[in-house]
Amino acid sequence: MAKKVATRKKKARTKSAKAPGQKVKKSTSGKATRSKSPKATPTRPKKAAAARAKSAPTRSTGTSLPKPASKAELIVREGFVIDATGRGQQATSEVLLLGNREGFRYLSDVFAQLSEQAGARSKSTEPAEPVHLSRLEHPVNVRLSDALEFRFAPLTAANRAATFKRYGITMKSREHGSLFGRYREVAETEYQKVARQIQQKK
Image 1: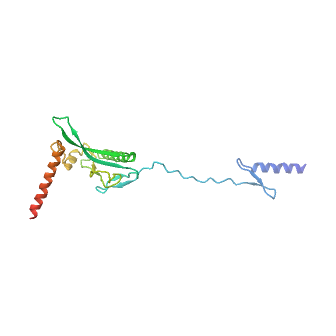
Image 2: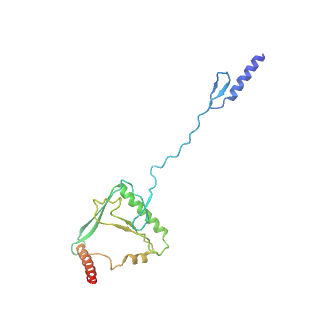
Image 3: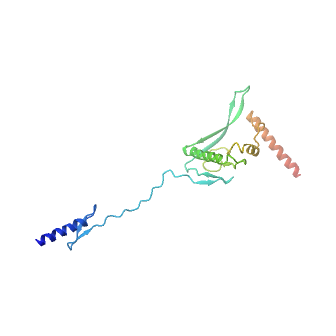
C-alpha cells in the first residue's frame, strides 16, 4: 500500500512540473526533465517601401531640394505658336515640358516644398531665395532638351513688393507682341552693350 502511494506522488510531481506548452521528456535516469522552449528571435521592423526622398542642395542658391528618383526624366523644349486672336497673326513663345511619372513626381515634390516655404514666410517682407533647376542636372535630359533653365521663388502678400523689385517686374516690363520682334530687340540691346564696352576699352 505504501508503495502505491509513493508511485502516485511521483506521478503528481511529474504533472505539476509540466508547464503549459512544454513537453516533459524522460531522461535515461528515469527522472522527468523539462524541454527548453525555443527562444523568440527579435524581428527588425521592415523599412517602408516608399521611403522619403533625401534632400540635395542646388548649385545656385544652396536651397535643399527633394532628390529625384534615378528613373526621373524631364525634357524641356522651346517653341512658338501662331496667335491669331488679335488683329494680326504673331508668333508667341511656348515652353514644352515632357516628363515621365517619376519626373513629374519630382516637380510635385519641389512645388510642395515651395508651398510650405511660402506659408512659413507669410510675414517676412524679404524676397525668398529662388530655387534653380539647371538644364545640366538630373532629372533634365541634357541630350534632348533645349538650353532653357527654370527658377522658382515663393511669393507672398508680405514680400510681393520686394520680390517684384528684385526681378524688375512691372506692367511696362512685361514682354508681349511678336516673338521675333522681342528677340530682335533683345539682340540689339545686347549688341549695343558689347559695342559700348569695346569703345571704352580703346
